[in-house]
Image (tube, rainbow, N blue to C red; front, side, top):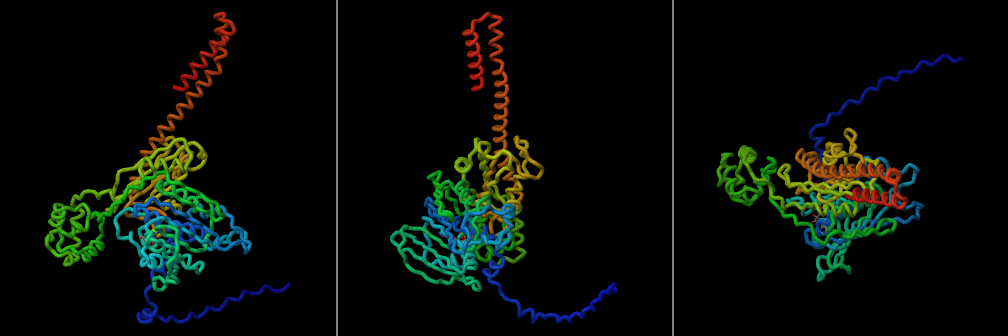
Length: 569
Ligand SMILES: Nc1ncnc2c1ncn2[C@@H]1O[C@H](COP(=O)(O)OP(=O)(O)OP(=O)(O)O)[C@@H](O)[C@H]1O
Ligand SMILES: [Mg+2]
């Protein structure tokens, strides 16, 4: 037997001497980062982290924009959405839909790249098409809207809209460009007497500027509207987080929308509008003084065209009249006639402190456009088969100076599965939120409500179970999303409280329905029990009163009819 070898202990390596960097050498590596470069690396922040989610996000951005544009122009929206497989099955890949994997059901943490377990790639190239009958886009604006991140009309406006950031549609185009190299194609026409334009462009990621490949006038049958075509790598799935679910829920929260959807297999789904009425127009308001932050106030003072502080307060904020302005400035100890641009940091802080202690009326609520109790129910009825529906629209409330309104709809019973957890539909400014449920204030408020007191089952810290669909809608001039991908509402205590109050109100109505059903069930049981004994009562009476057989039959009929009548009562 060979002698055991003594293990060789490796000699410690002498570490290379550190070459410390100097401020000068570090300076050589410091440079500006373009917004597009940043989001190319951090595309998950915009909702492009998995192929399935990317397909949904791109469609969502375009549909949201189309609905916003139609509503702003007062046009009842008619939208066409298509997902067209762009690379036919010549590579031997089946273009059938696949069920979503567990990771997607758990909040969309599917791994990017999308290799399926059997080694075939589920990622396909799709051409997504979204066409609207909105006001169109003036030709000069098309390149910047689709080829520049952070360019839009809604960021600075204080009114409810689906878009907020000015990043959505250019990011969708950029994702398409990154994954397939294809430019975005836009058709747009602003009036019947104006030519339609067809523009193809890419985004220069270093400069965050559009690069126009072609811009030509074209024939288009539409009088006005916009059509967007993006080719991208994605994964088409059915299930809770699918494009199909997003579109179904969009139809529920937007009963004025007429939608036609063509899926990758070519099947066409029509969602006709449930109402011909357009939503109430949301009015633009100025920011409310409560909740304004020091830096924001300083910037507003520097940017204002007003010549004195009193005018600044009255014109740049809502709910500040001459009296309130006077009171704020008196408390702050700053002269009314002072030029806003001449205020020093100390004065700005004093102004902010004075705002906090001054009683200012709550912001107006006509900047909001809730769905309304009737239409929440109408929407639920078109999308969910149940036997009880209820809805609640809360009065407007305020968080950080921003008005918001909460609506809740419940659907119960009927065809809904009784042995599963309740299905939750979350909406922000009428847009379905399909991902990041557990990070969302809506989810938190549902979990934090006591559903047992409404006659449902609920394990600790879980959703209630039973044949129930819970719809929650938050309408606000600024929805505080937890990230740029706009998937979850941040946990502001005011928002969670309002959602809970709306759930309680709707829950109590559900409780009354469940109790009524229980009473009915109980009464039915008792009556069925009595029914069983009616023939025996007939026999006993026949014996005691010496009734003939037809008389016995008559007694049985009378007793049965009386029982039936009491059941109907
Ligand atoms: N279909 C459309 N019809 C008319 N205007 C549009 C259309 N799509 C986009 N726009 C205009 O382009 C702008 C930029 O759209 P984009 O989606 O990038 O940002 P946004 O909607 O303002 O905010 P968000 O990033 O939150 O979506 C919009 O603000 C709107 O003015
Ligand atoms: Mg948008």
